[in-house]
Length: 129
Image: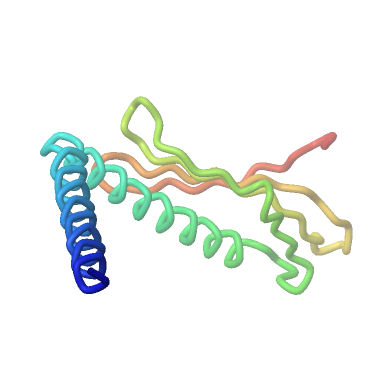
């Protein structure tokens, strides 16, 4: 009698485990991304890599452009990057540094990379900000 109860509990446990594996298997098949979703994910990852690379090269350009490098202060919160509707990649970075006369100035670097990989960098002074 006790052996029969133990055997029944074991069978119920095994049955529940099998049911759990079946449900997990069905969920994995149903939630599997389709080909279009996979392609979209790859494009987004590639865009993020390009944007990260552009942002890094933009920061390197800033470091090369500043006269008093020891006074360079790049704000982490003012760094932005995005892909425009025109297919170009954009990165901006605000920073401050002292000029050759020792006066602190604020600037914004604007870095743009076109579809062919050609990048354009420019630094503009932020007046009144």
